[in-house]
Image (cartoon, rainbow over all chains, first blue to last red; front, top):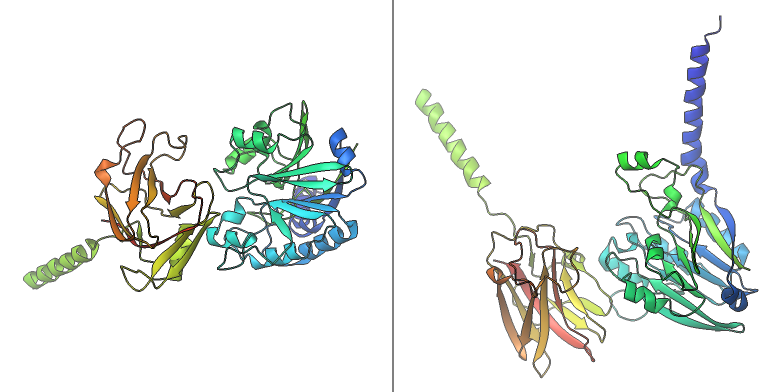
Length: 275
Length: 179
């Protein structure tokens, strides 16, 4: 006689086991390329025909399978501009693999970045993103330009592009006055590790904010479950947010933190299309 | 037999008390003798720290600080112990190699959530060329605008900074400690 209770129990356990194996062994390495269309006439005019790629939250502790795969995928995309929104290292981890990863990125126009809170976990090492060791000279380890609460103008045939960056060190940079200064030009691309900067930007600013930090939650859980685990649920978890003229895309990023798990929140490389 | 047991017990108790009453290490103490001290500082843009054998007043090394032209280049030590109520003074030695008087600002906060400069302790530290030993009485920690006494059991931030320097300044800092 078949015991349906046993079969149901074994099936449920099997499902949980399969989900666990998938979450730990498969999805964290299954990097996807997400194409995002953004309606913005200024950016369409300036960036039409260029390929803009957004990466975030790499949390690199070594150049492993995921990092090699990401580098191959980025190389195939042949980006003109790469924008990075922080958290390149693991908490208090070794910074060398992250510098190695950054040095392998190539883009025809340039690579700009901001730092995240993890990048400041070892405050002394954080200087090496921008400087040579023991010197104030600029870093020669990689070709990434780090923006620390300032903006850079890029002259392109279609017009001027402004790329601004809010620094990810806690308590710096995201004051309303500073954000307003950084977003005064129409069609600015504003890099910020923390998505909450969306609320500091004026609704009528024609700005596209690129952010990360959340990892999309890594696994989909209801708000009460996040609270039970001692985490806050992010207001802007993932995807495109629009309010009046300002827009923000929050990427799920590439790496993981706390637990090396992702479930229904795959790592992503974002390619923007302006229409 | 009982007397001997009592004697041993008293001796053990005295030994335990002697060990237990050993003074705790001060929460904030830098002599820059070890490279690890550099990891106990917050590194900011436009400020360069280097351990130096010049102008040391405690041990063999001092901290050479270069402030580059910027808004607020600053020295910021990191510390976990926020309760300073058992200490009376904050002391440090600075060597000013410039040929003129230079003013640094010492800022101490007991509440990181309050707006900048609203309620912190501020003191101007005038440095003549050469050595200066600075002693700050903790009982004088008074908020610069509200005139309230800072909570000495909740000190969370110490900064030594310059405001908008137009040229590079160098200092040698040593023996930074609470007494």
